[in-house]
Length: 326
Image (tube, rainbow, N blue to C red; front, side):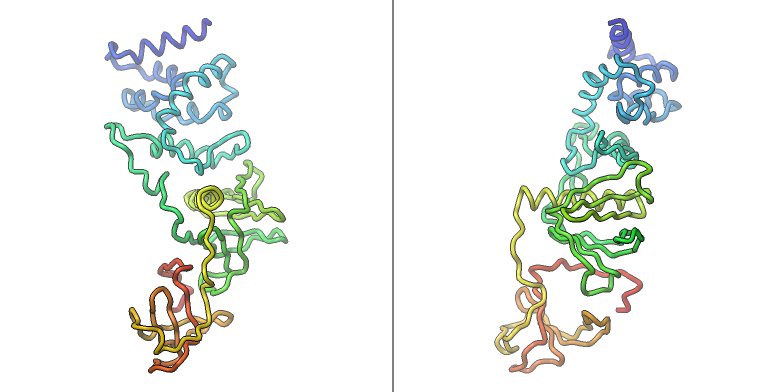
Protein backbone atom coordinates (compact mmCIF):
# COMPACT_ATOMS: atom_id res chain seq x y z
CA UNK A 1 0.00 0.00 0.00
CA UNK A 2 2.84 2.36 0.83
CA UNK A 3 4.58 1.70 -2.49
CA UNK A 4 1.37 2.30 -4.45
CA UNK A 5 0.78 5.64 -2.69
CA UNK A 6 4.38 6.63 -3.33
CA UNK A 7 4.01 5.87 -7.04
CA UNK A 8 0.66 7.65 -7.24
CA UNK A 9 2.18 10.77 -5.62
CA UNK A 10 5.00 10.96 -8.14
CA UNK A 11 2.67 10.37 -11.07
CA UNK A 12 0.19 13.02 -9.90
CA UNK A 13 2.86 15.57 -9.08
CA UNK A 14 4.87 15.34 -12.28
CA UNK A 15 2.13 14.68 -14.85
CA UNK A 16 -0.70 16.83 -13.53
CA UNK A 17 -1.85 19.48 -16.06
CA UNK A 18 -1.62 22.10 -13.33
CA UNK A 19 2.10 21.60 -12.90
CA UNK A 20 3.90 23.23 -15.82
CA UNK A 21 7.34 23.43 -14.30
CA UNK A 22 10.04 21.32 -15.98
CA UNK A 23 11.14 18.24 -14.16
CA UNK A 24 14.74 17.40 -13.45
CA UNK A 25 16.65 14.54 -14.99
CA UNK A 26 16.92 12.78 -11.67
CA UNK A 27 13.18 12.91 -11.03
CA UNK A 28 12.27 11.90 -14.55
CA UNK A 29 14.33 8.75 -14.24
CA UNK A 30 12.46 7.79 -11.10
CA UNK A 31 9.10 8.37 -12.73
CA UNK A 32 9.84 6.55 -15.98
CA UNK A 33 10.37 3.36 -14.04
CA UNK A 34 6.68 3.30 -13.28
CA UNK A 35 5.05 4.94 -16.29
CA UNK A 36 6.47 3.80 -19.60
CA UNK A 37 3.48 5.35 -21.36
CA UNK A 38 4.93 8.79 -20.62
CA UNK A 39 8.45 7.96 -21.71
CA UNK A 40 8.54 10.35 -24.64
CA UNK A 41 6.93 13.15 -22.69
CA UNK A 42 9.73 12.96 -20.16
CA UNK A 43 12.43 12.78 -22.83
CA UNK A 44 11.06 15.92 -24.46
CA UNK A 45 11.24 17.79 -21.16
CA UNK A 46 14.68 16.45 -20.33
CA UNK A 47 16.59 15.81 -23.59
CA UNK A 48 19.67 14.67 -21.71
CA UNK A 49 17.70 11.75 -20.32
CA UNK A 50 17.51 9.92 -23.62
CA UNK A 51 15.33 6.91 -24.37
CA UNK A 52 15.70 4.34 -21.62
CA UNK A 53 14.73 1.22 -23.55
CA UNK A 54 15.73 -1.05 -20.69
CA UNK A 55 12.98 0.40 -18.52
CA UNK A 56 10.19 -0.23 -21.00
CA UNK A 57 11.10 -3.37 -22.86
CA UNK A 58 9.21 -5.95 -20.83
CA UNK A 59 8.80 -7.34 -17.38
CA UNK A 60 10.75 -10.42 -18.39
CA UNK A 61 13.75 -8.35 -19.50
CA UNK A 62 14.37 -6.34 -16.31
CA UNK A 63 12.78 -8.61 -13.77
CA UNK A 64 15.95 -8.62 -11.66
CA UNK A 65 15.60 -4.92 -10.79
CA UNK A 66 11.84 -4.97 -10.10
CA UNK A 67 10.20 -6.02 -6.87
CA UNK A 68 6.87 -7.84 -6.77
CA UNK A 69 4.81 -4.72 -6.06
CA UNK A 70 6.29 -2.80 -9.00
CA UNK A 71 5.69 -5.73 -11.33
CA UNK A 72 2.06 -5.96 -10.27
CA UNK A 73 1.64 -2.22 -10.77
CA UNK A 74 3.06 -2.34 -14.30
CA UNK A 75 0.92 -5.34 -15.18
CA UNK A 76 -2.28 -3.76 -13.92
CA UNK A 77 -1.70 -0.10 -14.81
CA UNK A 78 1.37 0.76 -16.87
CA UNK A 79 1.35 -1.94 -19.52
CA UNK A 80 -2.41 -1.92 -20.05
CA UNK A 81 -2.47 1.81 -20.71
CA UNK A 82 0.60 1.83 -22.92
CA UNK A 83 -0.70 -1.05 -25.04
CA UNK A 84 -3.83 0.93 -25.85
CA UNK A 85 -1.61 3.58 -27.43
CA UNK A 86 1.47 1.83 -28.80
CA UNK A 87 -0.14 -1.48 -29.85
CA UNK A 88 -3.41 -0.08 -31.18
CA UNK A 89 -2.89 -1.32 -34.75
CA UNK A 90 -0.41 -4.16 -34.07
CA UNK A 91 -1.26 -6.99 -36.51
CA UNK A 92 -1.64 -10.61 -35.50
CA UNK A 93 1.27 -11.77 -37.67
CA UNK A 94 3.83 -9.44 -36.04
CA UNK A 95 6.43 -11.19 -33.88
CA UNK A 96 6.17 -10.28 -30.20
CA UNK A 97 8.51 -11.19 -27.34
CA UNK A 98 7.07 -13.72 -24.94
CA UNK A 99 8.09 -16.61 -22.73
CA UNK A 100 7.84 -18.85 -25.80
CA UNK A 101 9.81 -16.33 -27.88
CA UNK A 102 12.49 -14.84 -25.58
CA UNK A 103 14.80 -13.89 -28.46
CA UNK A 104 16.57 -10.57 -27.89
CA UNK A 105 16.37 -9.85 -31.64
CA UNK A 106 12.58 -10.13 -31.53
CA UNK A 107 12.42 -8.06 -28.35
CA UNK A 108 14.57 -5.24 -29.74
CA UNK A 109 12.59 -5.07 -32.99
CA UNK A 110 9.31 -5.00 -31.05
CA UNK A 111 10.56 -2.12 -28.87
CA UNK A 112 11.73 -0.08 -31.84
CA UNK A 113 8.50 -0.70 -33.73
CA UNK A 114 6.40 0.38 -30.75
CA UNK A 115 8.31 3.23 -29.13
CA UNK A 116 10.75 4.53 -31.78
CA UNK A 117 9.04 4.14 -35.15
CA UNK A 118 5.56 4.06 -33.57
CA UNK A 119 4.33 1.74 -36.30
CA UNK A 120 1.12 0.72 -34.53
CA UNK A 121 -0.21 3.91 -32.96
CA UNK A 122 -2.08 6.93 -34.34
CA UNK A 123 -0.17 10.07 -35.22
CA UNK A 124 0.29 12.71 -32.51
CA UNK A 125 -2.01 15.21 -34.24
CA UNK A 126 -4.90 12.75 -34.09
CA UNK A 127 -4.70 11.65 -37.73
CA UNK A 128 -4.69 8.01 -38.64
CA UNK A 129 -1.29 6.58 -39.43
CA UNK A 130 -0.75 5.17 -42.93
CA UNK A 131 -0.62 1.45 -42.27
CA UNK A 132 0.08 0.40 -45.86
CA UNK A 133 3.17 -1.78 -45.90
CA UNK A 134 3.40 -1.85 -42.10
CA UNK A 135 0.34 -3.59 -40.72
CA UNK A 136 -1.97 -3.65 -43.75
CA UNK A 137 -1.28 -5.64 -46.89
CA UNK A 138 -3.23 -6.56 -49.99
CA UNK A 139 -3.45 -10.32 -50.02
CA UNK A 140 -2.36 -12.40 -51.74
CA UNK A 141 0.90 -10.50 -52.00
CA UNK A 142 3.41 -10.39 -54.77
CA UNK A 143 6.41 -12.69 -54.59
CA UNK A 144 8.94 -12.16 -51.80
CA UNK A 145 12.45 -12.92 -53.07
CA UNK A 146 16.00 -12.87 -51.77
CA UNK A 147 19.00 -14.85 -50.62
CA UNK A 148 18.98 -16.72 -47.31
CA UNK A 149 21.37 -19.13 -45.69
CA UNK A 150 19.93 -22.64 -45.35
CA UNK A 151 21.30 -25.44 -43.17
CA UNK A 152 21.21 -28.79 -44.93
CA UNK A 153 20.77 -32.24 -43.37
CA UNK A 154 24.55 -32.40 -42.74
CA UNK A 155 24.39 -29.15 -40.71
CA UNK A 156 26.27 -27.25 -43.41
CA UNK A 157 25.17 -23.73 -44.30
CA UNK A 158 24.34 -23.13 -47.97
CA UNK A 159 23.36 -19.88 -49.69
CA UNK A 160 20.07 -20.29 -51.52
CA UNK A 161 17.71 -18.07 -53.49
CA UNK A 162 14.22 -18.13 -51.99
CA UNK A 163 10.90 -17.18 -53.54
CA UNK A 164 7.69 -16.99 -51.51
CA UNK A 165 4.81 -17.10 -54.00
CA UNK A 166 1.24 -17.62 -52.88
CA UNK A 167 1.43 -20.41 -50.28
CA UNK A 168 4.64 -21.99 -51.60
CA UNK A 169 8.20 -21.25 -50.51
CA UNK A 170 10.67 -22.28 -53.22
CA UNK A 171 14.44 -22.37 -52.87
CA UNK A 172 16.96 -22.42 -55.73
CA UNK A 173 20.69 -22.92 -55.87
CA UNK A 174 20.96 -19.57 -57.65
CA UNK A 175 18.62 -16.80 -58.73
CA UNK A 176 19.21 -17.67 -62.40
CA UNK A 177 17.98 -21.26 -62.01
CA UNK A 178 14.75 -22.22 -63.74
CA UNK A 179 13.78 -25.10 -61.48
CA UNK A 180 13.84 -25.10 -57.66
CA UNK A 181 15.83 -27.48 -55.50
CA UNK A 182 12.77 -27.84 -53.30
CA UNK A 183 9.50 -26.29 -52.21
CA UNK A 184 7.64 -25.97 -48.90
CA UNK A 185 3.94 -25.48 -48.25
CA UNK A 186 3.55 -22.42 -46.04
CA UNK A 187 0.13 -23.62 -44.92
CA UNK A 188 1.73 -26.63 -43.23
CA UNK A 189 4.53 -24.85 -41.36
CA UNK A 190 5.08 -22.99 -38.12
CA UNK A 191 7.74 -20.32 -37.56
CA UNK A 192 9.95 -20.57 -34.49
CA UNK A 193 12.55 -18.09 -33.28
CA UNK A 194 15.50 -19.74 -31.47
CA UNK A 195 16.59 -18.60 -28.03
CA UNK A 196 19.70 -16.47 -27.57
CA UNK A 197 22.80 -18.61 -27.85
CA UNK A 198 20.91 -21.53 -29.37
CA UNK A 199 21.59 -20.65 -33.01
CA UNK A 200 24.98 -20.36 -34.66
CA UNK A 201 23.98 -17.26 -36.64
CA UNK A 202 22.31 -14.19 -35.14
CA UNK A 203 19.36 -13.66 -37.49
CA UNK A 204 18.16 -17.26 -37.58
CA UNK A 205 14.62 -18.63 -37.77
CA UNK A 206 13.23 -22.13 -38.02
CA UNK A 207 10.43 -23.45 -40.22
CA UNK A 208 8.84 -26.43 -38.52
CA UNK A 209 7.15 -28.95 -40.82
CA UNK A 210 5.51 -32.24 -39.96
CA UNK A 211 8.49 -34.38 -40.99
CA UNK A 212 11.38 -31.94 -40.81
CA UNK A 213 12.51 -28.53 -39.61
CA UNK A 214 14.34 -26.09 -41.89
CA UNK A 215 16.81 -23.67 -40.30
CA UNK A 216 17.34 -20.43 -42.23
CA UNK A 217 19.35 -17.30 -41.52
CA UNK A 218 19.26 -13.77 -42.92
CA UNK A 219 22.15 -11.34 -43.18
CA UNK A 220 20.31 -8.43 -41.52
CA UNK A 221 17.50 -8.05 -39.02
CA UNK A 222 15.39 -6.24 -41.64
CA UNK A 223 15.57 -9.27 -43.92
CA UNK A 224 14.79 -11.59 -41.04
CA UNK A 225 11.52 -9.87 -40.15
CA UNK A 226 10.61 -9.26 -43.80
CA UNK A 227 10.70 -13.01 -44.43
CA UNK A 228 9.17 -14.16 -41.14
CA UNK A 229 6.28 -11.71 -41.32
CA UNK A 230 5.61 -12.52 -44.99
CA UNK A 231 5.52 -16.25 -44.21
CA UNK A 232 3.21 -15.72 -41.23
CA UNK A 233 0.88 -13.51 -43.31
CA UNK A 234 0.66 -16.15 -46.04
CA UNK A 235 0.05 -18.88 -43.46
CA UNK A 236 -2.82 -16.98 -41.85
CA UNK A 237 -4.36 -15.83 -45.14
CA UNK A 238 -4.43 -19.18 -46.95
CA UNK A 239 -5.41 -21.17 -43.84
CA UNK A 240 -8.13 -18.94 -42.42
CA UNK A 241 -9.14 -16.28 -44.96
CA UNK A 242 -9.06 -17.77 -48.44
CA UNK A 243 -8.14 -21.22 -49.54
CA UNK A 244 -5.66 -21.26 -52.44
CA UNK A 245 -7.20 -21.68 -55.86
CA UNK A 246 -6.05 -24.35 -58.24
CA UNK A 247 -4.26 -22.76 -61.18
CA UNK A 248 -3.17 -24.18 -64.45
CA UNK A 249 0.45 -25.31 -64.73
CA UNK A 250 2.77 -22.41 -65.50
CA UNK A 251 4.37 -24.25 -68.40
CA UNK A 252 2.12 -26.08 -70.83
CA UNK A 253 2.12 -27.63 -74.25
CA UNK A 254 -0.09 -25.99 -76.81
CA UNK A 255 -1.69 -27.92 -79.66
CA UNK A 256 -3.20 -24.75 -81.07
CA UNK A 257 -1.68 -23.37 -84.25
CA UNK A 258 -0.63 -19.74 -84.49
CA UNK A 259 -3.45 -18.97 -86.91
CA UNK A 260 -6.00 -20.19 -84.33
CA UNK A 261 -4.75 -18.06 -81.43
CA UNK A 262 -6.47 -14.85 -82.38
CA UNK A 263 -5.01 -11.34 -82.40
CA UNK A 264 -1.84 -11.12 -80.25
CA UNK A 265 -1.54 -8.36 -77.65
CA UNK A 266 2.15 -8.08 -78.47
CA UNK A 267 4.66 -10.21 -80.35
CA UNK A 268 8.40 -10.15 -80.95
CA UNK A 269 11.73 -11.83 -80.43
CA UNK A 270 13.04 -12.55 -76.93
CA UNK A 271 15.90 -14.57 -75.46
CA UNK A 272 14.75 -17.46 -73.29
CA UNK A 273 16.87 -19.42 -70.85
CA UNK A 274 16.63 -23.19 -70.88
CA UNK A 275 15.47 -25.22 -67.91
CA UNK A 276 17.97 -28.02 -67.27
CA UNK A 277 20.66 -26.27 -69.29
CA UNK A 278 21.24 -22.57 -68.65
CA UNK A 279 21.74 -21.67 -72.29
CA UNK A 280 20.05 -18.66 -73.88
CA UNK A 281 18.18 -19.16 -77.13
CA UNK A 282 16.24 -16.68 -79.23
CA UNK A 283 12.56 -17.39 -79.49
CA UNK A 284 9.68 -15.58 -81.15
CA UNK A 285 7.11 -14.87 -78.43
CA UNK A 286 3.42 -14.10 -78.78
CA UNK A 287 1.22 -12.79 -75.95
CA UNK A 288 -2.41 -13.89 -76.34
CA UNK A 289 -4.80 -13.12 -73.48
CA UNK A 290 -3.08 -14.49 -70.36
CA UNK A 291 -0.52 -16.73 -72.06
CA UNK A 292 2.85 -16.29 -73.75
CA UNK A 293 3.62 -18.78 -76.53
CA UNK A 294 7.12 -19.14 -77.91
CA UNK A 295 8.24 -20.41 -81.34
CA UNK A 296 11.63 -21.25 -82.78
CA UNK A 297 10.98 -18.89 -85.67
CA UNK A 298 8.43 -16.23 -86.49
CA UNK A 299 5.20 -18.08 -87.30
CA UNK A 300 3.19 -17.43 -90.43
CA UNK A 301 0.05 -19.46 -89.73
CA UNK A 302 0.05 -23.25 -89.32
CA UNK A 303 3.05 -23.47 -86.93
CA UNK A 304 2.60 -24.80 -83.41
CA UNK A 305 4.53 -23.26 -80.50
CA UNK A 306 7.23 -25.08 -78.56
CA UNK A 307 5.42 -24.26 -75.34
CA UNK A 308 3.49 -21.68 -73.41
CA UNK A 309 3.61 -19.84 -70.11
CA UNK A 310 0.40 -19.27 -68.17
CA UNK A 311 0.68 -15.76 -66.70
CA UNK A 312 -2.27 -16.35 -64.36
CA UNK A 313 0.02 -18.44 -62.17
CA UNK A 314 3.03 -16.14 -62.40
CA UNK A 315 4.43 -13.17 -60.54
CA UNK A 316 6.48 -11.01 -62.91
CA UNK A 317 9.52 -9.12 -61.66
CA UNK A 318 12.74 -7.68 -63.06
CA UNK A 319 15.79 -9.80 -62.24
CA UNK A 320 18.68 -7.65 -61.03
CA UNK A 321 21.39 -10.22 -60.49
CA UNK A 322 24.97 -9.88 -61.77
CA UNK A 323 25.05 -13.66 -62.33
CA UNK A 324 22.34 -13.36 -64.97
CA UNK A 325 24.01 -12.53 -68.27
CA UNK A 326 20.94 -11.09 -69.94
